[in-house]
Length: 183
Image (cartoon, rainbow, N blue to C red; front, side, top):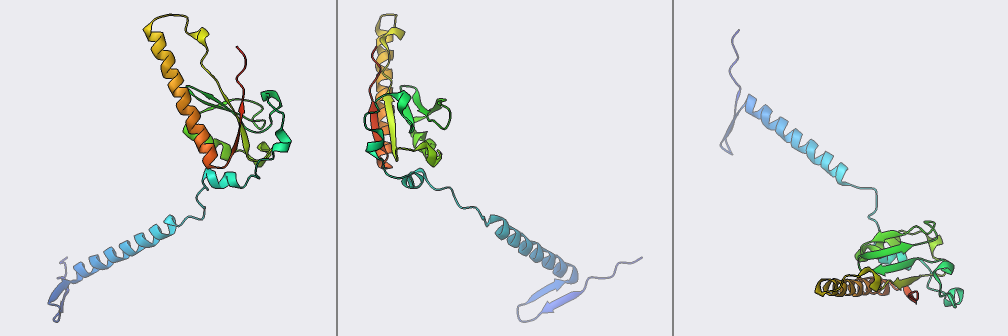
């Protein structure tokens, strides 16, 4: 069986000559591109809204009501979020998590607070913070190495405290500084 010769099409104005086979390939390519664009447009459209930032979420919590927590200076009576700032991170305690401590990076504390339900804020937009000072008992060895290590922990503690306090203040979350337990 002999193959039929390709059909020759000529457009004199544009000076273009296409065979029937080339014309079919062009049509298939154009259809494929159009289908791809339609599918891309449909799949890139998202019905979900981006998650609001922590600042916006925390602003939905009523302002702090000092009358509700006046005189509470002990952790066991505190019902709002309670942060423990340490040299190695920040602990988050809430009544919602049955007082299980969640360990966070200082820069993640605000996002973690924003994820808490409104029931975790009975006193309004206020959090208690305890700064856990490094104990001298853990450094029983003497010498320059332990002094340098102790100084590095103090620097990390100050940095973490500043990060957490700055983030909370920017988000208009009132801070109640809890006293460190007596040694």
